Amino acid sequence: MKVALIGLGMVAQTHVRAIAATERQLQLKGVLSRDVERSRVFAKSVAPILGAVPQAYADVQEIAADPEIGFVIVCTPPNARADIVSVLTAAGKPILMEKPIERTFASAESIVTQCEAENIPLGIVFQHRMRESAKLLAKTIQSGSLGKMSVVEIAVPWWRTQSYYDEPGRGTYARDGGGVLISQAIHTLDLTLSLTGPVSEVQAMSSTSSLHQMESEDFVTAGLRFANGAVGSMVASTASFPGSAESIVLHCENGSAILKSGKLELAWHNGETETFGEDAATGGGADPMGFTHAWHQSIIEDFAEAVKVGRSPACSGREALLVHQLIDALTKSSSTKSAVTIPALEY
Figure 1 (spheres, rainbow, N blue to C red):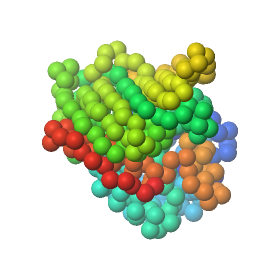
Figure 2: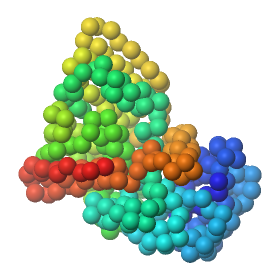
Figure 3: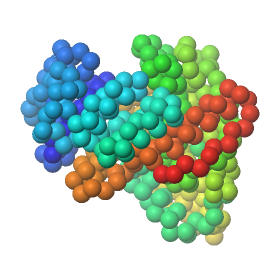
């Protein structure tokens, strides 16, 4: 199956390496940036990885008209998504999109609804779901062995340098839709929701610390109430030098599950403990791309298979709306200094 890549920023190289690792199951036929010359330069630069120079497309319309393209990976900033999606859905092209879908829940929902109306497969790149430790925890929860979930602890103690936020548009509401919540913590929040189910109420506080000069927040903390009856807390930051792995801790009736980076520890109330996996870099430090391409490879391969057989991908656009809804509620709660109730969302 042949693929096109739109958006040649920081994460594009990860997608290239992920596609190359499929060993010809997938082929990157072409790439597209806002600048045609940049597309050509990028295409030549990734030739050693791919074994060939991909095509440098002139515009989205050229991709949409290419009958060989099986699906399109969209890695642009979120403010550039709507027009691209309109062109691709009109051409019937399935879309695999880097998080976030858009800058706000309403805008994200509009894109999801548009794809559903045109019966276009839409997958979202939440690669943390593809870690073996995360999959094992999901199976453990589904088995019921942990028992009723009571307390949830979420921590994203990451670090970004000021130079990271000096890039034009980064950390702004106009381009990114916000700061640490929608750009970094969204991964851990999505993974949490895939394990716990939705949040029903939040009370949050956010701030921009003195360590960064940026428009949006680099620190958020909140209390959470889940639809399943559990309560929880979260703290997310890009001001936590030197940065360390994010974690999700679930305290349940029969034991606790500690998921940190690529490692899962199960601490049972009977005194037994089990450990699975190993520590893995996640991009929580000064290098945002300091993580393996293997998780992206799994997401891409899953989406290709989903398109081929007509099933839902690992994370559909509809399912991804849950984390957008939560981020909107956290932002609103912080700005109004009050608790915010989150209505149930079908997914």
